[in-house]
Length: 135
Image (cartoon, rainbow, N blue to C red; front, side, top):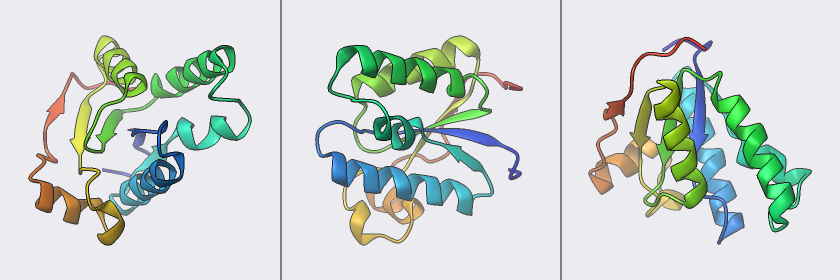
């Protein structure tokens, strides 16, 4: 993968926001280590929009979906899929953007990379679904 490859990072945000934010940052670091350019709107838009306000959340999701549409892959990170992530996966599939399942949420704080978590959780890092997309 080249550094010009844009990958959309889909990981949980709501709930334990502090831990989920740290996990999303780790996911982005992992993508950078893999030579990709990560796009993680859930690290950006909650800084300027109120995720607890349904109208502002809808705006944030719409902006995130626009960014997703120009990415070459979507990486689904973590041990669970939130409703927002499910929408991102569905959009990627509709657009023909490959979806890759990377790593797992459990124990991520103690591991230096998602790859280590991948091994511990036996999550198939190489499962990619969808057709090639040139965004």
